[in-house]
Image (cartoon, rainbow, N blue to C red; front, side, top):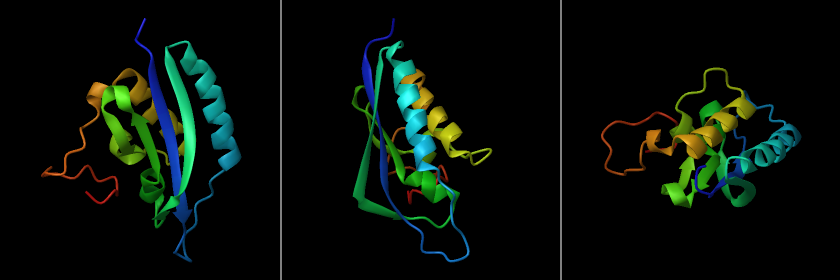
Length: 131
């Protein structure tokens, strides 16, 4: 059995400055998904939590910015505050719940496959986080 770990999914505040693009985010469905996933993860020794930090606000100009406004933290794995886009790369279907699930599973079961946060990196992973 794997050692116990804690993963926190953090949602930053979102601002939609564009008049020609809006995202249809079903926050209730996301919350229900996280509650169900938290129950499932306990069997794998993972405590899944979520938080909202609305004092940090991300301008949403496209789907990549939505991923940038969601952060995953797993101190045991050395993941302090990586954006979802950094963890999963590009989103094949732009399905937010599917993308959050991919991120959680990657942090829970394959954190070694996540590129470390490195400010001296030469090649951007192209998630929109501004590196």
